[in-house]
Amino acid sequence: MASRTSKYYKENPEAKAKRLKQQAAYNKTKEGLKIRTEANQLNRKLGTYGNGDGKDASHTGPNKGKLETPSKNRRRPRTGRKYA
Image (cartoon, rainbow, N blue to C red; front, top):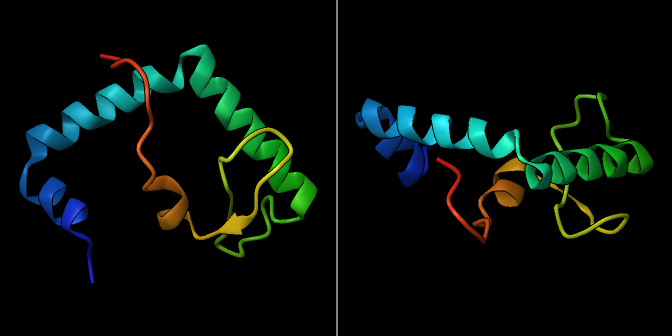
């Protein structure tokens, strides 16, 4: 069963394009890069990097966190300014 957000973006391609554009801009920022590299380091430390188990390292902070499903991990809203 798809989430409400997933359904919304399937029904609204303009909104999906806007979201993807904003996400791409955020991923290029220092903060976005930092979050991504810290998550990769934690994934490697927890032994889940690239093994296909479907788990993510939680974005709770550097060198701390836990493994959880990507949908749970990524549904937390980011805080701060807008990026596009």
